Amino acid sequence: MNRAASGADLDGRPDGEQAAVAVAGIALVADADGALYWPEQHLLVVADLHLEKGSSYAVRGVLLPPYDTAATLAALARVVVRYRPRIVVALGDSFHDGDGPQRLSALSFRHQPAAGAADGEIAGHLHPMARVATRGGSVRRRCFAADGRRMVMPAFGAYAGGLNVRDAAIAGLFGAGFTAHMLGAGRLHAFAGTHCLAD
Image 1 (cartoon, rainbow, N blue to C red):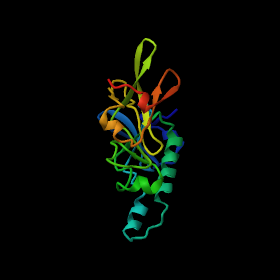
Image 2 (image 1 turned 120 degrees about the vertical axis):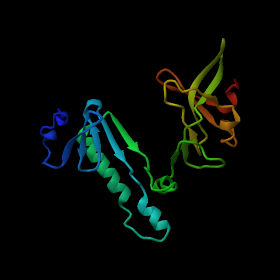
Image 3 (image 1 turned 90 degrees about the vertical axis):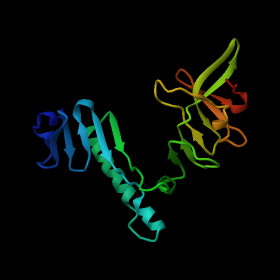
């Protein structure tokens, strides 16, 4: 059991590697690796990862060793293993610049879909929902909308609404067509966008 809240023997780590701190009367653990842990909530907080900072500088002709992302993720993995949180919160500046995700992999993760072609983009924001005909009417469910080049993810929040995939804001992102992968009870159901109904 993590005894950081009591200030005693913070998990048996050597003196100075952890410190019991309180903010607004809440007991927290500051870790020498730069993370903050909230034992009562099993929540780990990190800030300003700045992934791909080395490659950002390299693009501008400043050569730094290209190991920053691997080193940062290894440090994050260490604190995750150390505290075994249920929740990890990253406070902004996860990438050093806007092009960092593209330099890291062929996939680009962003909140709002970019206008025009965006190969490898995985976005949210639009809360796609699909509506399909059934024997007695229709069913409307959250869905992933994807065409093999890009994807718009469904909203995860319980109270988040949805926008029909036939709406121009979503359908316009996918040139020739797309597939709506509707969320069902324990499985996904795939429908061609042309088989989805407007609201």
